[in-house]
Length: 536
Image (tube, rainbow, N blue to C red):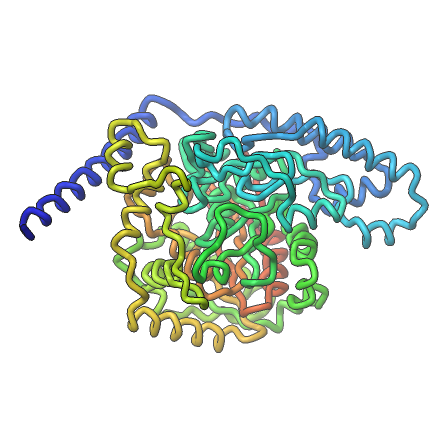
């Protein structure tokens, strides 16, 4: 009896392995038969201004909100057929709201400073990940069973940005239920990386990363439970910030958190320009903004700097590419030269357990003892449950409405129902204590975002745990800013994570501003490439 059970399990595992190889083979075949499509260059100078600069020009009547919104509409219509980042727009409504802004400004008697304090992003467009509720827009998170769900209200972060005067343009693609590296689902299809459309834009906020990097948006709202802001920011060469856990409300997202996941999920800004991160974060944090000392001046010369170039050789993840190690060392050298500081290179062995720590704590029951909802539960409905192994069989014969990564995650979860082992709990606590003591209130840590530049589509199936370079900081609750470092010889973005102690978000944001100046920040897709486009 036991032997027959073992045979059945092995047969199922074999079928899953065949399915993975089939998916990768299809990816390789499609790449041989197709080439990357180059995006048209940006021609409207309004698209090359930061959100802060646009808001200032609108307040001063140097440009109208209608002109700005129309410029972004034109750009989305130009690039979206290539990258498939925007899944639903509200262009007519946005133009009407922009016209109302222009009329308000014509009638407004308040001084510019008063207007800035009250409506800091008046008339500036933004986009949001489709997982966030935006009134009148879909909120499916890529689930076919939720294709008819339309939001009747705004998520908290969306509402706060609208209250600050910003105008929502569209919602963007994500991975199915927001837990995979590729922004691909059966409802909206596949989103591409604007620097090379044969590569992934990351996930799950990949639609945001792609449209921002393409010049089709200036401010984006993303969410991050395992690198879902930072990895798209890295792969698309923009800035993304995962705030200290618990500061920015996660209300109004699908899927809802369960277990301890609310402690690990973070909502944050994604922007092309570093100067926009702090004011957008201040708005999104609402009443909690005071916890982050965002108005404090930061003297970068008085901070302490550390660099960990790799995870320590974990067998669960790929080693970091030499070009990314070199880029991180260049950052350390730049900080030392510019600021007169010393960047200490460290080895922290507990990083080797990042994958196991993330998986164990994400599946942990909540403080009320209720278990976290399984991925299979989230994939199904009250009327129709999803059985992962049966769903995999359907996928093999192309009869499933779910993506392979979603089904695979549901299968993996079946073997991870036990609570975290004592060893994993100890490793997490040791890492937490070590980093909190190391960083304190004035420390900065440089750490790789991912072991490679943006991978080819479907290839993350072969290295599914590489996200844990980013995901570990969700479990630790630390603030992290993803910073672009120019383009490599293939024209693909390089980058690094900048980490600080809890509630020290203002430090990572200040370092991001400096690195933008040193390395050039966002580079338009198709721009001339260099290993590091920084000062020489």
